[in-house]
Image (cartoon, rainbow, N blue to C red; front, side):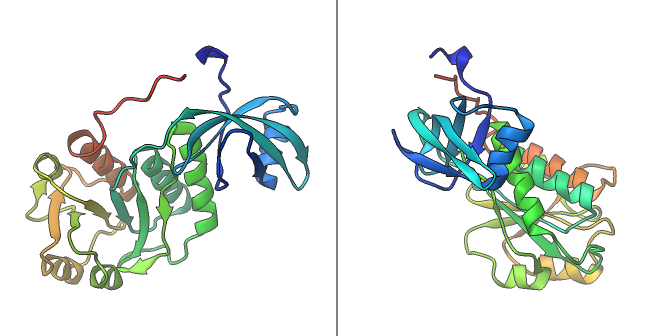
Length: 252
């Protein structure tokens, strides 16, 4: 099979992938293959997970309850994954969906919702957001799906912060280094924190600055929407300190 003939359809699976391995497909995956893509049994697809890489497979059965696929050969071995975290205050539905989708495309390893003083949204539909993250990973050729964590308050986030990881707080005003400068000089694990549409309160900014691992950073002279700020910060970081120099692999 030539590289041009490789199937475009990619599905993330939790099951082990190995030559001849039968892999169970979920009801939602089966519905997508049959009802959306109109594929028939025997058609090819690509299955992936971070442990086993990406595999060429063919599905041999589809039912209303799911289906199965047979793994044939490995297309890509497992790869190192990004270690960048994105902590963000939840915003309205379409905007938070975009943060999760674009955060996945831009290589975040962890997506952490954080409730702050001015966060308007007080409930997060994690199942919907996980579905967006999976779909984005399937589209953008990642081998992993970012971890979407349960929402926490800002105080709890800071109290449980892991040693050795810096937290770059995207502050809309006040004294802060440009994020590009901080990224160019960065070394070691990092996370970005983006606040809500109303910004951080004065008390929250004071609390953040009391922690040695916090680095206030700026994204320029304009006040950005929360979802725009998250995407812009990720793009800057990945270009200068992350995996922005990498290139997608050739298909084999």
